[in-house]
Length: 577
Image (cartoon, rainbow, N blue to C red; front, side):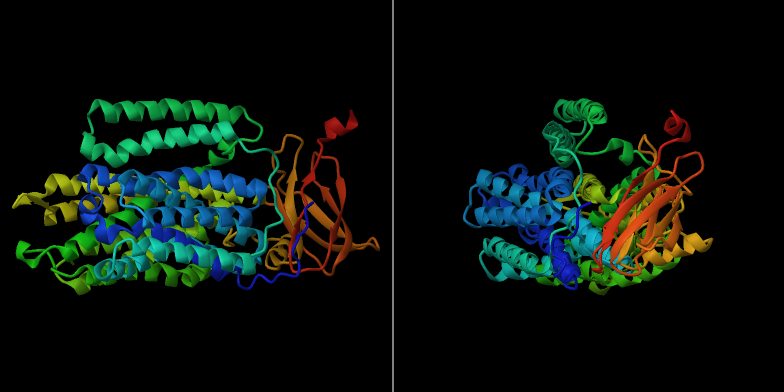
């Protein structure tokens, strides 16, 4: 059992530093939004080619999230977080020194590769924070995508309006360097490691399949949704992903554990994540255009680039402020309820937006309401995922969940872009979005949220704690609940020979004098946790009906840190033989 390698390092600064890293990475998504309409002229290329500057970041981010998550589980989450940030800095510098389209696309892809920092940060929090702080910390980290995007929009608009547009990339590089320095100083490495090797073939297969899938989504409006190119790429993506899935199921150490992913809670949470991603990106596409359209159109609000950015900024700020609210709601009702509540608030915001588009202050109201809902929904997702997977798999599992959000934003971008293009009218040779198109876009987002609510309703009911705490219904269960609330503890799972969880197994903690120091019952997933009275040597004894008892020696060094100990029980028939 690996022990913490940095016991003297304090974790007080971990949450803000990791959240800052997430914000820095999320800045890349909206960095070029203020100048997107000028990219063809700035890069001396056609508009269809210029869209690749945005698409490259999206594709690279989608591909990198599960890969970096798995590498973090194997080689160290802090190490891979630093690698992600370093790649982002290199990509920013590449973009900052070029006006060439191909070089810019390469640099933007490197920037997008850093999206893996989000699941890595969540995994680090899961490994080193006490349970009572974990809910709000994960909520803040999960919301950092929206916070970074919301804050970047007005700041990027201000820079682009008053300086050379390359300054955007140099500023991003500076933020990346600062985040690397803070991580090196304040964030210790996690001692938890997954077993196995890195699945290179799985990484290549997933990358190819995702590119083939996301490419026609982002370019379908230009190529035509019924064109041979679009349909051919979708068919190729289906073949590649099915073949990749079959290969992953046969491997002992796959990139993505599809058996775990197929579990009801994980699957429904990931599907709901796609819906939340669709809703999140819809408002980011609609409101800035509505605000900047000239008032001569009869519905445009005629605001400057900077003012439009400021009106949308509350979207991200509200997401940040909902993190502590989420922690309290989740502690009382559980992450499933907060996910449903968040999506209902999003639906209310979009519904109100159908009648509140005639003044700049009304767009601020929409941003605040939708941002609050997205903040609650995004904050619930990692808690649901972490509660359903083993601690050593949190990086890969949250990486896959972040991937689902990326797919949602990709679908939203393609569909909303198609709607706005097909409903636009021509004015002096320029396509101008219409209010009808804006309304349809909001209705699509509302429909996506409705699907997400339906998926969330069928999530299995879990305990109210953010990371799998059990409901105390007996003396043993009460001991387990108290142990989950403190950091100094033994925790783990009780499994049968096939690796399946053993529910209602009794785990007894015995001190060096042979006295019982605590007891707990495992939950449906075989999980237990026991508070440690003091540091020293102990024996963990597990018993369960139909299984032979098992005892294992374990040592706790007295630091404020949990020690993971899994216990394997043999069936009685096997033990007799």
